[in-house]
Image (cartoon, rainbow, N blue to C red; front, side, top):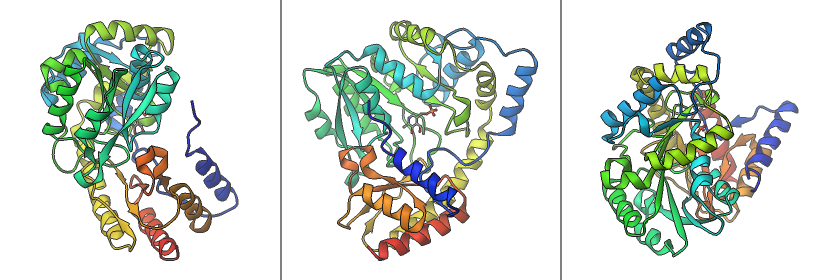
Length: 375
Ligand SMILES: Cc1ncc(COP(=O)(O)O)c(C=O)c1O
């Protein structure tokens, strides 16, 4: 496995802060809001009531039931609590990958895509193969490219819609084409739906809606982004009972179960639609602001993301994204994530997170504009 390619920048930012510089981070991967107080109260009450022990490895039954109900009602996915394991989302993706990827297997991952997919595949001895998210299609999947990347060794396709780092969202047509590919080649589909709720236009469609695809699909979702619960380490996987019976072994012999109190908090979170709505509206305002500012900068081309709290502008300057991010941090004390961290297709881009205050965004974008004007 490779260390996080953004770690050097994080360390540099910390050093600059220690030296007294006011560093603005536009690189954060989590909501800047505090978890809704109702959720905190529910976890607190649970702890006071003695829910401080191990839970069953698959999670507390009432939460598994509620997650199944959510997917049935909101996503049209016909499953029951028997199809659910409660686990942190990142752990869920890891468990899915290590449970089914054998050495030499190829795993199709989005490029640009989340930094941890290739490293999880490496951990399992597999080979990550990037498929393109096409900027001209609003960063949707380029189906022809995806089809071409399928080989005799392909075992798994990972999709992430809405996408980190692009904010793109797959459509019905995209998902139908992916369904056909998975079924034709008897593949396993891992659908990372962690940004489901941070959506501004269009709708999130889970591939689990195709009943015939369910035996081939592992859905991963969680509460980190939707309910500002990154520190709680709580999410879940939805899969066929056959797949779950394999994956639960990894859970049993690693983390045993998700944190008990976090499970009770999550139970409450599933009832809290208002907080999610408020957070998304706040993000929407920031998105529009950041987009309007970036669109004015010469040498940048930017898509307005339909979802997530990320923007992934492309630049025309002759400089690598790593160098651009390093110089921006060193010279203007603004942290962004270099596009190359997200795969080959990310080069020539950088990622801005707008999960930070308007004040930070205004100041950060001013400094960025100034920096790019002098490149
Ligand atoms: C695409 C994607 N998947 C999964 C995760 C992991 O989520 P969690 O922190 O809930 O484990 C993240 C977190 O940044 C992410 O961006």
